[in-house]
Length: 451
Image (tube, rainbow, N blue to C red):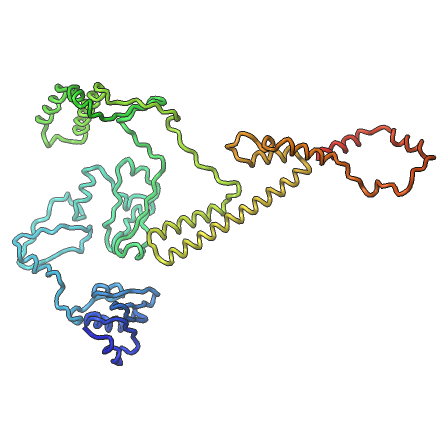
């Protein structure tokens, strides 16, 4: 151990902030990190070595293995005072055994191990396979397919998925699901998600139908099996012993060389028929009546009339940032999520205010020019779940006050007589008042009252 006061007194460490005591191992690693070209600055805190790289990233070094993340190609453990790792070396470990069997976990040709005093066993017969793993043979025997190098943008490429040196991450699909994949690609390497493996993305077609054999639907009636412990003895008595003996006899005479997929399917189908018939005879099938229409799907809730393309794009960006922050949970991802959230809320507020302003402007214009369209527009804008419209919700007293207001005579200043009536002109006045009312005057008066 080295005391921090002693280190601060040395000239070599005068520019280094030392908060806690350092071990001799980390003290030697500190000297190595300071001399590396990829390191811009380094300091210690809480007994750990913190360094900033030239690409802007920050790394914390606690053990010799962390030196590789800084940019060291090789580490001399003897210079750090470590003569040997905690785990024994491979050759020393193998010397305790007479026969050693290695299990391969990669599909490359870089894991060749040569040990003294050990003889290599002859290779297995893999039908001239280029790879050294039995994974592909297993997929062929189970009728499974590998999507890598066959689908989407990775078709004919087979991009690397581990340390940019080999392919160990496979997407294995069944024959039914393989035909429903519409997009498959290997994503770029992201050290924030994983420092070794590379992500791949697969997009499947929706509404993939899956046939269920144990559920039979007939209109709105569904028949489902349900076990009842009280009918246990009845179920056992209804099992067909003759069919069971026939299946056992088939299994006894069946040769291993003749077993294939069709033989296994036939035997499973025979077992299924025996169990189904016994359950039907015991009354274990329940009939359920569905009031809803069979196969109906809930329709998506329609968007608001003011929710346009801009709102849709902002919402998509917010959901993408939210999902990314949920995976990585870093300060940058959280800040990005907050920015996208504010932008989404701002777009919603602007579009709603603009829609509301235009709607009110349109109502004011129709109120004076087209009252029928005015009330029709108000009725369409109300809640669709309510049976009554806006007109029925208005009280009769409100209509009465409105009609009184329309029939109120507003006296104009030009109508006020400033002088007395001349009695000599009574005949002319009577003639003007008793004149014939024209059609144009009636139409103008009707339109004025309708307003």
